[in-house]
Image: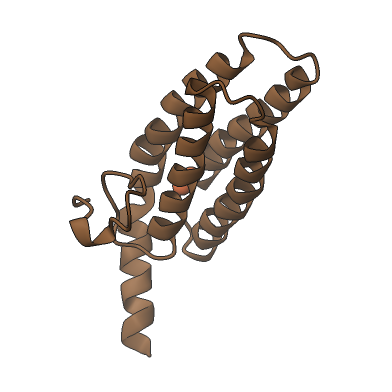
Length: 146
Ligand SMILES: [Fe+2]
Ligand SMILES: [Fe+2]
């Protein structure tokens, strides 16, 4: 894992502070990070409607999780089941947040922010980081075959 280079910083977009050197995973993590930052900004500025961004986060997360899971299946990744469980926990949590938003809980936004802050980097650093070797090895040999 190496530090993201400054050339990745377009405008003042928030940039996730590391990358795996695996595409499309890195770009997807960046995009997720930007959505996540928008939710945090929104909550901090108390500008109200986070529903729409959470919707967007949910949608993009589904897309990202299937990209990872498809590659795990393709490359016979040993820890696929544990990883999928982690993805499912996140999806369930997003559903819970959406349900509680119907009741407009005052503490909810802080709860969402706290959860995302913890979950996002932890998942990438603890779980995603484990597939890096397997993905790279397989992607490299795919490239050599071309
Ligand atoms: Fe990921
Ligand atoms: Fe993941």
